[in-house]
Amino acid sequence: GGHWYVAIQTEKEVPDPVHPSTTAVGGDRGVANLLTLSDGTMFLPVTAYRDLQKKLAREQRKLAHKVKFSANWKKQKAKITRLHQHIAEIRKTVLHQISTAISKNHAVVVLEDLKVRNMAASATGTVESPGRNVRQKSGLNKSILDQGWGMLKQMLGYKLQWTGGLLLLVDPAYTSQICPVCGVVDAGNRKTQAEFHCLHCGHEAHADVNAAQNILARGLLGWQSTAGHAGVACFAA
Ligand SMILES: [Zn+2]
Image (tube, rainbow, N blue to C red):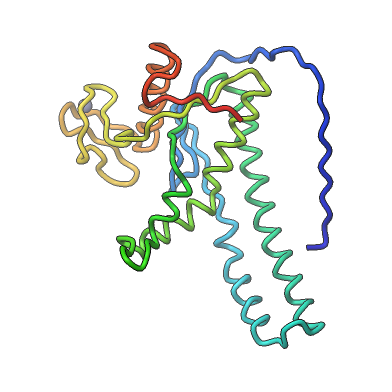
């Protein structure tokens, strides 16, 4: 794609870093918001792929009409590669900005232990067992892959390690349905995509902030009781 990459590896002794902050924050990765923190901070999704998708499709159609391996075909192929690279760079830049800001401001970050690859694969299914709600799910997939949930987790992991912080991963079960006030778990609590309304005590909150607070609570609970508590995994980059 018109670029060369050079990787240089060095090794040196560094003292254990001490994180300047003492705060812990939970993060809910979503579709409407890429990431919502338990303190109410929201990060919008990276939609670079969607925005450039039409252009990509157009260029790919042009490629299909050219004679394979001809000079024009090669030129068109290079154009498509550059477009793919452009999309990836935009996504990466945004994820770096977010992960740098969070890892500087908070010593402990708790995320859900999502199996992003499994989630992406489950939509299509196999010939023997086709995926359910394929259309909706493939839309969700596109969003998941678009936003780079896995990449965000990875970046937060190593950046927190650099700064002396810690990334905790917790069991994602029911984090969107638990009421942090009365503790009741009810699917009906999640009123809409954006609203949390507890059917039992009436507690109301933004749905993603609520989930992020449950994620934080779960991470701290597991961390305090014992390291390696069931459902809590310490992330090592
Ligand atoms: Zn409640």
